[in-house]
Length: 592
Ligand code: SAH
Ligand code: SF4
Ligand code: F3S
Image (cartoon, rainbow, N blue to C red; front, side):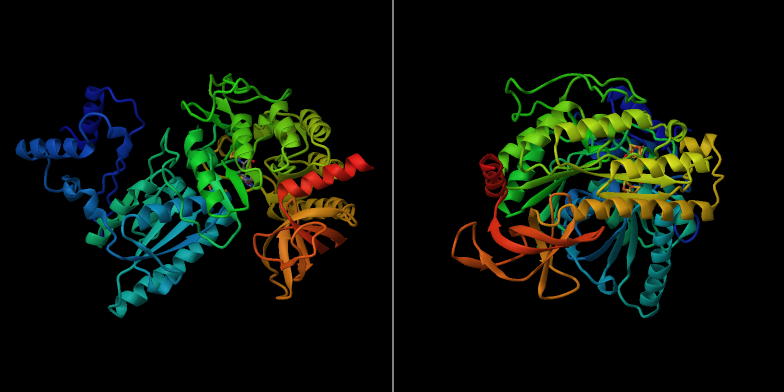
């Protein structure tokens, strides 16, 4: 019998479409007893649409009586149009876990849902739909989500018992991608499972499960192209002076411990035009800081014919890595690189602070470093995730560099960007990590003196190379003890760094009223350290008699008066802008 999957495969072959199309068919037994077909619509822009295909194939299949009643998938939705996927005012509540990319993905999801007639609510209790944007990076991250699902199951039951509104529960993001339909097998209150590349499909998935409470809908297709380039995210925190822009998605690196390449798929970059449009839009909205996001943000490689390039300085070349660093993939041919994009953005918005995360150390060629050094609006605060300071561990982790080449890069960064601060990620207790190997990580942290460090106990993830080839043989207690030791060593270095700034004047972007006291304001320095100042009226500019209060979104010149490893305190001097502040700093240097 010619199954639906084969139909689709044959159809695609006949259309000679190059795509990464798969069909996710999922049928649970009671109470979820139907099947949902997930499609990736942009693939069908050329030629007949998926709908045409389904209608035709279904008709012929029905006519030819090729499907038995049981195996016949429910294809009611094949006859639905976009208008049929409208939320009709249903209220959606969303929780977010994991990294900043997930926060930005939530903003993309809001954009998709609101434009399809759904509304936002901040109360889970009054929602028709509850969505969890999930993370799978470590066991602990997933455990938090299981706990939340436990709670939501009770909420759903309570509502059903009271004949209150029916609640659909959706799991989105990396955990959805990792566990796929297994999620529903384990937790039957889940109605929707949607991976990171399927958010455009959410209105359809939601319609399917709303129309039929016994149905569950799964779309875990990973795409080679999806960057949500045309979607303007709806900001989760519209008052914040900072905004995120995703510039690329996915990861091709395959570090042996990491689940991300499996949950986020292959690396792909968003065309510069759409990024620049978003930058301009955010600038018009009054945003003061933009963080460019990507799982490997500095591997950015734009293959589009962007109108924003064309100057003689624009390079089109193959990917090259920092000396001493190697990749698991071959050099990629062509495309404009991260330096080109950063150059364009920083020149378009000279008074907006630019950060980017998460970079990979291999993608910091001199041209990126020089640009950061030259431009006052690109923060001189770089994330150089080291993971370990020991060569054997780095090798087992598949990181593509040695302690020596990493330290050479640190030296190069310091030479080209004077005053730069660094941050890093570390994993403690990776497979087979000996005490001596761990000591190398400790000495690396002491030597480099990081401003910020994210330190994690190793958590074995299925599907990864470490899971297949290595043994998770370091005990939980040893992992935790090493994390504690590394945290304390890192804190010593960070405290020294922060104390060395006492007496200096820093440019701080005020984020809002301090959580500890309503009389104080909190902001962040260029090195991303929290700075607390008293709420005061200060001059509107240097050497100006007029004053104005410090507000959320103000750039303020602040004299640092005390510091510990995490927070600095200061006296606010005057309001300023990035260009004014750094112009002033340069003048002072020239005068001295
Ligand atoms: N793309 C980013 C990392 C994203 S994950 C980069 O390469 O820097 C963020 C961090 O989580 C990683 O840098 C690593 O330190 C940590 N991490 C990833 N997988 C882990 C695992 N299995 N156990 C513990 N920590 C892990
Ligand atoms: Fe994970 Fe490595 Fe990719 Fe970072 S570079 S997301 S750690 S595989
Ligand atoms: Fe987690 Fe996925 Fe981000 S696994 S860290 S949410 S990329």
